[in-house]
Amino acid sequence: MSEFWANLTVTQMTYKVRIRDIARQDNETGNDMHRIGYLLSDGFQIMALASQTVFEMANDVAGEAFYGVENFSESGGEVRSSLGMSVGTRQMTARASIDTWLAVGVTAPLAQPSPLGVRAFLRREGARARRIAGICTGGFVLAEAGLLANRRATTHWVYARDMQRLFPDVRVEEDRIFIVDGPIWTSAGMTAGLDLALAMVEKDLGADIARSVAHKLVMHQRRAGGQSQHSEMLDLAPKSDRIQNALNYARKNLNRTLTVEELAGEAHLSPRQFSRVFTMETGQSPAKAVEGLRLEAARLMIEQSRHSLETIAQETGFRDRRHMREAFMRGFGVPPQEVRRDARTPA
Image (cartoon, rainbow, N blue to C red):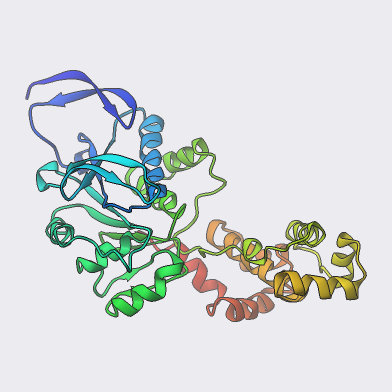
């Protein structure tokens, strides 16, 4: 079999790669490029395209052009994002030999269903591609194509209940970062597309390369698919610096008892004033807010560490493992063991 060397540019980075005299080889041999196609429609959410950087960085870390990334649309040409920025695309075609299709959602999926041609194309490609994904509201595109029937899926939390209502045969899990069900991948909104892409890199190239990619992207952590879409700290959103200071103190000292008196001291208020102002600004009592912070920290440790549940309970301020379990049932409706099991479920 003849071969020659050529420079290949992939997502603005150039690599020297071997060109063989066959079109493509099976990816399992490790000798071909994994081709990724982003499928766009007018009104698409441009944040989803940030996930392309994950594949670019994976090529850089691996030292070879493992991924090739292209943008496609139903008719080709320029496609306009919800921000008004236009992106050049190729016309979608099976001849592109795409391994992974990623359907990018639009900002208003209820008002703008996906084109019929896109649905038919994805149905055909579902039998050919190695995997098909929906980023953010791109899950609606997959559902409209019939690819999510009797499968688990997620989407941006704002639209999760609408998805369940419109597609009752889809098992929508609204508080997940991403879900993998066979060859079908779906993610939550906005930055969750980065987590989805990192998970793909980990599956294709291994955990070490995925960690290096996350480090290059200055991502604080690689979130597990089962992690909550919500942040307790963001949900509280106090208006004053003094209440924010008390919350910051609580978050950094979760292993302490954190009485109202202690938190009030950080806010320079009397305990009574503190409780009143805290509840007025956050909509929660100090005790409920602190439990929420403990739950968020404990869930993260359960998903991303190998520490025992007893150790995690102590580190996050629960009296013991039993009290942590009771709090998990109140807050999440599932015990800590189930959270850990979901986080470790292989893709």
